[in-house]
Length: 463
Image (tube, rainbow, N blue to C red; front, side):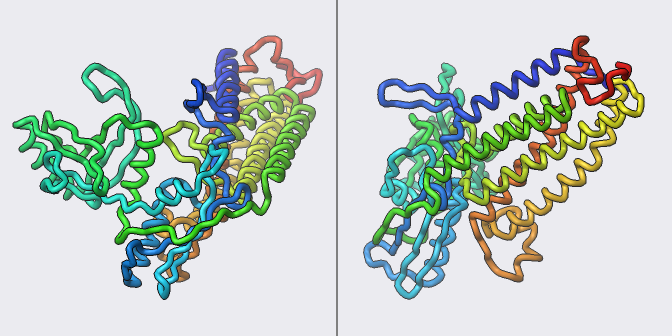
């Protein structure tokens, strides 16, 4: 059965790519007075690594002269690393000096900050953040849950109140032990419309009333959260509590090794390269080349969206110089996929097939080499992320039989390269394969654009 598209398929996909690309590159926000509300994050909201934008070098020590054991120092180091990873900060360095009870941390600036406040970032990183759920509203109330009973936390936005008013909140998924304890407590308190207060250290952050028993292990924390505070709270819950309080002994800012001028130069070079590639594709492959360029624009925009987080509730991934190299390599593979397809279509037209026959044959015969090339790169990217990513991550656990022999080798810059390469290659299937085919089939149904010459065929070929 021959697959044929509709003209509107091309129009819809092309429009969606253009709108998505605009929002991914420039973002969507509104400003009221001095308050800026971000609805969609753009390229300017990406968190760049130390090598591009600089960052902070801070030395933490146990507060109040606490004498930490080597085991506690390692536990604190792990918590700090987890907090950095939970914020998608992969370009960081964490060292321990057990002899002097010091933890030295280097991490990049936060995304979207024109004037970086290192003190706020240090406080967030070194906060103890001990989470407890207590019966009633008293600080000495019976503890129902602790942080270890919470499997994961995520910031969300939606209606929570009876009148349908939407607000930011934090959704909790409990461990099995937490489910049982929480079900028992809420069953008891629901009978008297009691309260369960939620505490971070000695501060009560919410005290919701219990109207019904919660037995499925999914709970929410609400209480006039802003977008930033909801995301921050979820990050602190996910990262766990430190074994002892930390204080910043000293800190200093780190100058970037490249600087903003180098970043602007890379951006300009990327734009020039994209234009030259698009011109080459159009001149050599005509209409399929033009559609391939549009798909390449969508792939580039989607890659940036995966790095910036796109929606405000998601943290930006840390983009380093090797990460930029990963983007360029993935885009190059996207061009290669479209070249394979366009060449196949040209060959089929030259062999005498009709336009529809050439498109179907070109798509089917070009798919196998595209899959082979992309799958091998995906495997390489996964291995890089496993070898140089977080030591307690999913990929590290999968590949632990191999890399466990070599010990921890966390390197955020290489992890960034693997991430951007992986994302770009996966998106190549979405835009370089799927979107290109939908648009080509759709445009081929437009009568004025059915001339085989527009697809690389000879002038006397049949349409």
